[in-house]
Length: 285
Image (cartoon, rainbow, N blue to C red; front, side):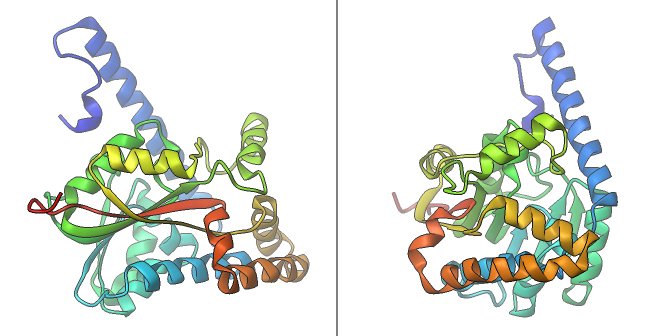
């Protein structure tokens, strides 16, 4: 039985009810993302996606400076299939790429993108990773664990598969986003028009506490995508449905990309907040 199945003491009616509820919840999660993975358009050419890639690349260059021969796990393959292809970029710099996703279509597309780098790709839930303990030098998880309630289980799985002394970057939506993206997402969810289903947000402090509660040592705190959430959404909408208008949204994105590169202080206020963490070695406190 996986960690996510352990929701109540065995041998009780409450346990069986909890098990069934957990299975139904996981099945709904899998079905939702399978549908999204099959139908969501590719957004790799959008101006805000280029900005997203620049943010991710800067994260890697700052906190994962040595990639060659490092085994790198990415906890979803969405960016490879639809967005920034950051794992492909890391692999081109010598990392050994491994990725999982809950959607078969996303895994298939991600594997195709990474094919030249002999990737390890699997259809899997981040709450029950199909890898042995201490398997990876690096773990990258950006915008994954906020989509379900058992975020602590997912963080615990990342801790388990990361080797002692290894590092991870884990990011989630920033509840303190100055452009109020969480409020926008809440309204869109209530209206049934938010494409990414359930999405929680975290304060930077709450994210730090979550990661430390699972055993990680936080070494740095930062963020990506300092820009209004509505502008990212509008840019993607124009890119996919009104390409002529995408020139306008691209012009609106550029000042935020410039600020992110040139004014490091704004990075902590991005709409994704991120922690850089280490799995302590046994001989180190």
